[in-house]
Length: 350
Image (tube, rainbow, N blue to C red; front, side, top):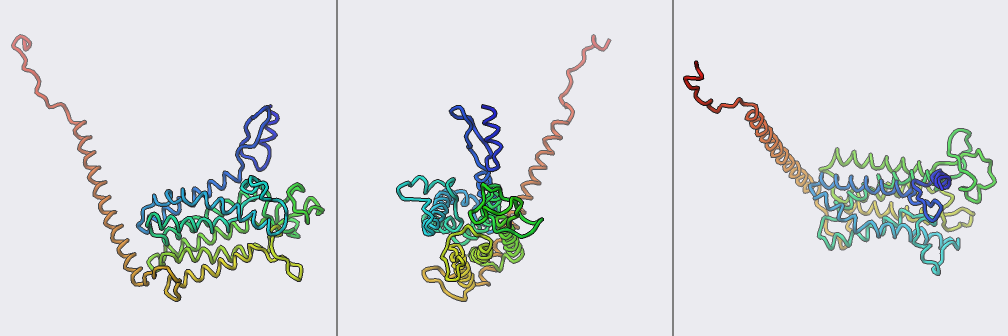
């Protein structure tokens, strides 16, 4: 039994195996661990972002309960839908469990983002909260979370690119994990670690947007970061598709494949540009409230700064008061006993 458990734990993708029915079965995969870490880190950042906009950070954890299941389901259904459009025959409506089981294939971030945004819109309408600032915070957090999740793809040896043609740069892909078109290549062939390229792009995008937000917060109208996310994520994914031979799509007359993900990445960029232009008043999205002007945003930021200074002074006064109270208690505990001693009798004096 121990040998089976060690063999199970020795698998690259497996984080934890448990004994079951006389054998060891995988219970937790590293991809799931990193996905959970990515979600937690992304949500933590989103809560911090709301704090900087003087919003209740607890909203993030409440919204996460509304968004998480739809986002995961949307990511899975989009992945399966692409596979069915490509005619792979892997999934069938006669076997619905295979459709919703992420271990049989994977998930797609586009479907997750779209389903998550729909859930976010419902949450905003029901809870009457600021949807634009929540979208800014959530999508900034998604950049970090998705970047962390890409390391799970690296562990799983998936989403890699074509051969690099280099003798030193790239990742080795065992024959069991290779795409059919690469099955006959030599064992020492190195492939593009596309998932790491995308992780780098996601972290870089987050770093740029975070720097701009911290440096020029009073000029960044709420919703502009959400639009910027779509622009940067779309550009990055469009480029990465050049190194993604596993993606289904439309076969062009030239024989090249124009993937469905590349189509959606173009839509991402267009949607992001429209959002940014709307937020800064250069165009108007119907049925959406007009954003504040730059001057209104500056006044709002100045009011936030004034409130932060007031809170900081209040916290400083409370801290000083607590320190003085503790000092008095220490002095009282260290003071000598001032109680009068009982009188000494004449006999005791002799």
